[in-house]
Image (cartoon, rainbow, N blue to C red; front, side):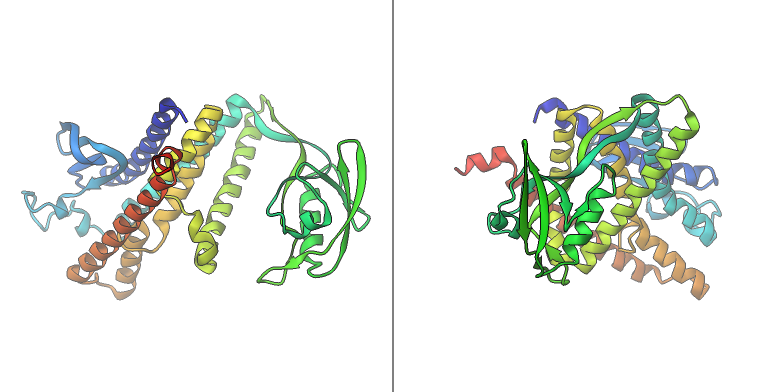
Length: 365
């Protein structure tokens, strides 16, 4: 993992933060709402510029940022009843400002996909018959016990041929899941040999069959270039919708299956590490990384948690229903508690991910 790839990843994350905060900033300014600070990063100020109304600043730690409003500034000279203060605007105006960061991240992710597909081509796959077994999960897994090895290509299951299409992997997975504790017959290609194995899937906690392998489509990916802008826009929309759906599903699983998924959550250090690996393998992978992280930022910020955009939108929803805002003391208390919890979680994730870094582990050997 090179220094250049790490710096490139940090630059991408900083850009996504700028995009998010710019959404809040532009939504406020376009409605004539006062904004007195636009900060990229936290900590000591590296550079700042005082505009006619807003102070723009770049701070030492670029993995964060914020847009400040004079409503929260005790030194502000703007009268408290000024209609252009954020807190004095109708609920809808404030909701637009708060949700604009999420909208900006989603728009940015889609435009990056359009750029990638338009310049580098639309990702496609040249399918071949069967499903590849890239990895055996453990030597005690049912597949390993039956004799299946990493690199094998499963051609059929119980005489059901797995075709040269994207349907092959789902067909195989359904057959395995529906045969918990029941033997199935797998026909496998290994080099030039065609072998047959009988495997009995074990039942997981939900009762579905598992044989303890990773499964991947058989074939080779390629970039299909097209001069049709409509196709680029359409394929970008399809891929965008797919990533958003998978992201939402991932966070839903974090709630419903917390114990198994919490170990997969990464903090800033882990995110930078993964991004650097993508960048080192292929610089164009940074575009994919930017899309995934931008969508994740949008989804996370929509969660109805204190100190996030979703938490503020929840307060606005309650205000709209009640016809009057929740008392400021209650809002401040909830937001401060949420901020402390989020910062604490962030610190724990940073420590955990840092300890897991390869060069850190070598220090303890």
